[in-house]
Image (cartoon, rainbow, N blue to C red):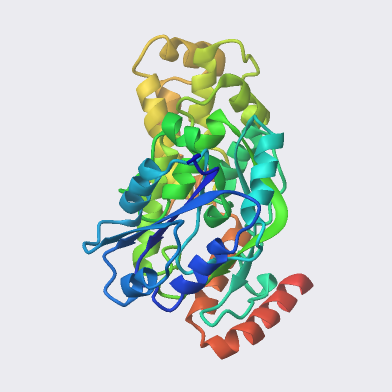
Length: 380
């Protein structure tokens, strides 16, 4: 028997009310040969029973009874996959078209330099009702235009994640080269993967809606709870500190060249210095995280030749300049104005406040308040 073209993978956890719809949206896919690998991550509700009740020869089900983390289960499914491509679906979402896989396989066949392709999402609530994107502070985040690798990395660096993971179709060989998801990252494992992916491959974003993405306040991993927000800050540091590592020079120049202080791009050591200073650019959303990383890298460079000599001669930046910089970058007390180095753009702050307010409202009031806030913002 020939191998499947696509391996569809799903990690399930406590989604007994939604998992059947998710599975059915995969089983109705047409025009492509696929296998469907499902693993439960120790659900405490009836999720395992619901999955086991669905009989189809394309399904392989692995009903784990111990909760170990979504990335662990997902990585195991990737290792089991035998398809040329891998598609991922969350157990509380569902695909909105019957040709999702066939459509994306065609895209990948036509674009051999593309490592993965994605699409757009319909946002829905617990009951499957559509949530208008404009009623959410970040409702249009997945509606992205295509960019070069360098410009994608610039978008990630400036504004964070903007790709809808469960719309993905990726070449399995990408995981072979890049490695799997990092289970130590609870909030940002997909963001970490996209950064690694785009350093090596082009990606393609379709403007076609491919998935119904379910918002479950208090349950989504991305929900803005106090615990999640703290974890996002810490995980952002882990991801961002290595952001420029192993980035090809041409990709780096394409994405960040407009920020360079020294335009000499032929010297790789000068490029490393530019990377350090980029962390200190104005108006980063997570300014304390960026500032700490940049300060640490500059501290190291001033202690190591030939970086110290280059920084002194090409940037007129020495220990005294570092002393001055250390007074402007408020890393630990989070009170420094930093002459712009540690300022937060007002629209980012407002958007975050509005997001948290909306999430705490009763469901019936969210569309009304969202509409009022939108009108006020447009009238400013």
